Image: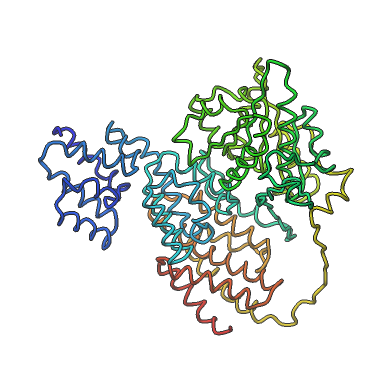
Length: 598
């Protein structure tokens, strides 16, 4: 190691301490550090945290005189997964890491709301590429032993130390895919939105907004849903063709005519079989000397595995080659080779996005048919939408290369955030535009046959009188008033939000008010950044607790009081399991004072 490298390591040590948890690389540095030094580093982390442990590690490192330790340190970073830090030290350029600081500040500010609303296990697989493998295991273990909030707290700590320059965007995508409320606050794009408290106060009219997110269960492999003997429909008998039902032929008809189509039909009706019929027709009707190529996109790994099996068994008798690639296998195979040498390819969509971005696949023109399972997800930053952006750019750019036919499968096109029929229609039109679809195929002529296959539940409504007296609501309302009073005193400027009148406890309007306060906190700025952070963190804590109280009041309206109380008990149990500050301790004590009402 040169004197310049040693000097640079000293100069950039603050960057390194913010990111490196030295306990993750000690096994790679065991031949360079003494056993007692390793033990001291581990003890320093346990007692004072990773920053102090990293400081001690760097001190030991800089004391080494043996040749080769600097390269060993870089290799340890690379093998442990610290690729961003490795690159920064290799080039002595920390600009990429410096640009992440604004996102770290935002995440620190939003940490209370992250802990209150995000389920780490639901998004961990989506953001694992931004974390060290050992961190992922620790998050899972903490969620299992201490609960969701403790796991969320650990996830925040890991993200704050992440050296992956794309982690803010990856987190945003994961939150949107999980339909998390936190995605409304995690604004990683440039530009600050000003939040006006007047916009929150209106005529007092309450409007309920429901966002529907649909994820289909994998359909039964009895693809035609034929109630006959297994010998007639079992996919294990690859040489016994399945007989399609009339409603399945109806669903497939527009696609067989070559139209870009969204097929919308209930779960369990055999949409997978419909897609097989479309593929078969598509491949068989190419002119002599030409050849079709189909790609089927599956969002979830279990669905991908099931569809790969179903397609292989069905097309085996026709002599078509079928192959599948998922994130678990992509590193071990050539995506380009698989696509070139197979007639039908089953993919998780991110695989194709990555291949298009790195040039392994030149364009979507290599395919003649694309099928999107759960196509209602074609929005925002979802890989489906990224693929269709490419498609539409190609189409509108006037390229002479042919484009594939597009088929979407879904149980429901959904309505998004729509509050009116017109807005719902607009949402559906946007989905069709995103998929370049001219037809929505639904069952119209064979409804009776469909209803014989897919059970249609009956809905019975009974009006229930409201409670004459509601002790639970009185007590929770008192807790909310106390929390509001404490929150109002945190900041004079943001305290203006607490003067708004039209926000009755236990209503959707109150939820909207909380969202407005959270958004105001994300753009709130002061010359004193430490004070700014303290104010915003406190307000997030108070309003996150207010949101839970509001949820409990809504639950108590439609369910038993004990259900609402159990909801709050579960929340405060998670709060106790996580590391909580004086504000949370105070709010928890106030709740415990009323817990005897159970």
